[in-house]
Length: 358
Length: 234
Image (cartoon, rainbow over all chains, first blue to last red; front, side, top):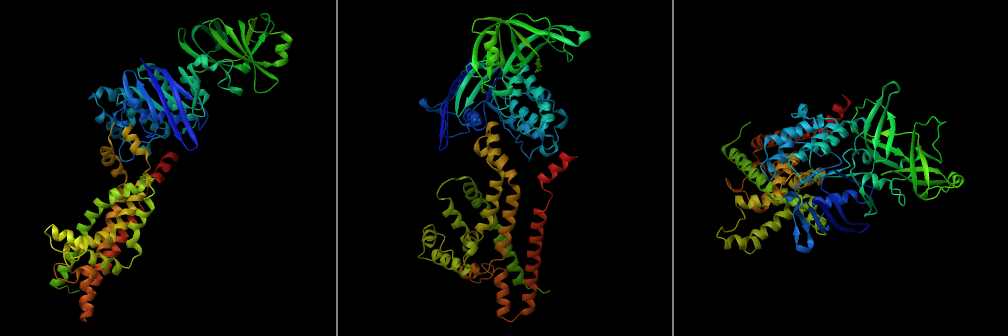
């Protein structure tokens, strides 16, 4: 079971051409700069771009295969689409918006689906409200619930948080995580925000100029040394781990992952809880021996996996392998030279700061 | 104010004509406006100009061409004779046809504006919620464009009530057939019946004022966006 997208769309000033296989579970984040074709790709999947050619297969369902003359119109594709602006119907209240999709979904769904969507998105208190009476975050949650009640095989989200300010984003993000964890619906999530990638992505698809540059499990794609997907200050690794123990007096928690453990700030974590950690390349330095005379708490034995020049000639990006986990480290080229670092060499990664993504 | 039986007859006929015309116009103008609002065809401008022609043409010119077309040797006249309806010139249905053409831009333009203001997004959303195009049109586009429909209906109705030149050209002034308020007033003045002309003219004056007042009230209703900002600030 997977999602196969092989699509081409040519415009006068712009071309999208992709061929990608995505897992039929979890969130696949499509990441790239504005104007790289992310939204167009999503619209092609939904059948909203009449001139798109190619093949769209979701699980066993073929929605489009121009070679076979198959092309389902949008309303026959089991898709849920959440647009950047919530686009609720102004002439209907929230309940009416939810009912619109419910009445039209092909398998006659029960009220249970509606109730589940209302609870999942926490919108029970606004059912009688009109769109203009809702906050931006509520509006977007209603739009997500409205898409869910049609029981889609694939949920498409086009920068659902882009129009929201920071506080309103926090109104929606936890619900998206809940969706990912509670429902078995694959999602394609378009964004150009790194923090959303870190928080939500299971699979990361990187687009540039209408093409896919990288694609795979998020932790792997983020640490590709030959191509730092996320360049600049945001370059770094994403780790998934489990809270091993809490050092209460010092307000620290130890998170274990494949290849080691890191101490992080304890923000009310529970032992056994799964967390995502973001380790930025600029917060990782390298020593040849385990340092003891340092304030830094996190030292991981590692092997230098790759050494690549960074954007600025003074900087070097190191790819460090700690067991099954990969970290990125940004150090000066002079530092690399002074330590005599080379690929395959054993060293210690010093991690100055770890961000708890969730 | 003394209104004679003929005057009342003219008023009733005028209201009938305006009602029938408005209904037909909405049916005709909706697809035309939808096409104009969405097409990227090179035909858009020529069609838009054609629809707007009655705005600038003298009604007598319009009436003249209609008269020729409706006559026994005109294309419409030949068709109606072939269909067994006789010729439509100097008949109620001839007037209806003339009014539809004459008021077409007043029905089309508000609808084009409404459909354009709506943008393509609501129809796309409806499609992703499993609505086919017709379903989406009636359940999403029409309700969202309601102000446009109200405006189109009011303008079509009022404009038809106020027409004179076209009526005179293709309708003549036949009681109970084609004698509407405007031609009745003309008749009174011709016959030096100023008191009766005053009565009918007064009715028209009040009617027109009420329609414009209604339109102005309708346009100045607190709109949704203003409302939204209020809420966001609260």
